[in-house]
Image (cartoon, rainbow, N blue to C red):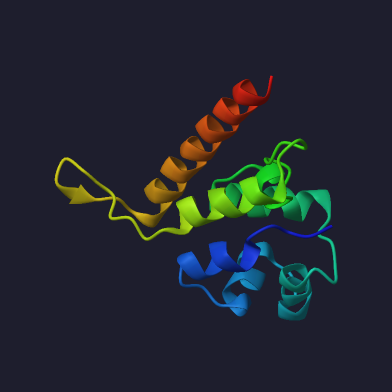
Length: 119
C-alpha cells in the first residue's frame, strides 16, 4: 500500500519526519518507511494521519481517484492542482489547509464532471 502524498503533506506543514514520528508516537524510521512505501501503517496510525492532515484515509491511500480514470486524466488533474495559483478570499491569502480544501473540492467536481461525460 502506498501512502499517497504523505511526504508532500508533511512538507506543506514544514515538519520533519522526526516531528511526524513524535505526533504519531512512533519511531522516525517507522514513519520514514511509510513515506517510502516500504511499510504500511496500521488502521489506528492511518486514521491519525488523516485526522492530522485533515484529509480522508481514501485520499491518503490514493483511492479518491475513480477506477475508470485514465493515466492522462491523472496527469492533467495533478498539473491543474499543483499549479501555484494564487488563492485568496476577501483580500486575504488562503492558508495551506484552506488551499488543500479548495483543491479537494475542485478534484471532486472534476471527477464528477468527467464521469458524467463518460456515462
